[in-house]
Length: 305
Ligand code: 13P
Ligand code: SF4
Image (spheres, rainbow, N blue to C red):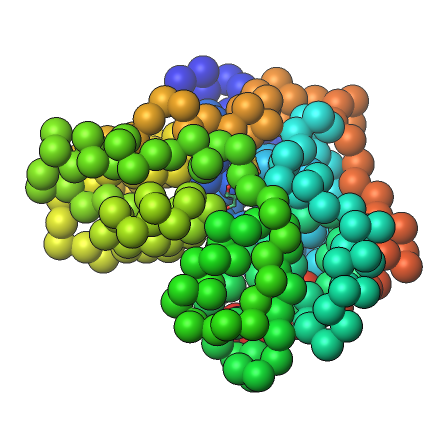
């Protein structure tokens, strides 16, 4: 470990009254300089409580936008301006307006992996860790348009038994690489391991796992579990988080192909540049969009407790 750069980051954080937030898919060295590492839900909660003037958000654009919307008086910097989420761009405002016009009586449940504009047109947001809880609180006779991830939507539908959900046809290009064969093979090679899979994976894969969980849910389960060995079917960054908190346990990553290129754009140098004010991009959300998007995000936070 190059401790000089960590010392520099810590000094800059104090000088600039800054906090570094990082998603569990970020490279390990970035997680190690963060004040908080978590899943999309944990990061949203953390962002809503931040008292520092500056948030350096190590993740992808929709996450930094969410932090800005929930903490409008703070400056939010995304160290890697090109770090997007292909799934978030699979539906835009015009497409959502059109979708809504076809189902005027349905409410729109919007996965947080989405743009601020689509959140602003939605009734409630969710993350992979609270989607089920929120859907269970919505009256059963109310139709739901679920955007943009058809797999997370179908998981919610299966778990709640709702027959009135219509899914947008989006997906995560990383999690759809998971195949039943990969899981069967991993199970055969590691018969004592529990398989943990993210709900962005397709149905035929989810049914082969022991647990379907958000990344935060995976961290909590591993910590509390009496099992020692796990097969992790999600993006590889989380292996760092899991190994760090559970050094006595054994983890097998399902496949190296489960690597999100956008999550891997960052480096400690770009964190330093963002803190110094000569790198990254400040997140700006137009006030009218932010106000409406905030409404659906706050509703999510309220319904998650
Ligand atoms: P989490 O909700 O588990 O943070 O997942 C976010 C994500 O981008 C998954 O691909
Ligand atoms: Fe988006 Fe998938 Fe990357 Fe998550 S892993 S940020 S959903 S592309």
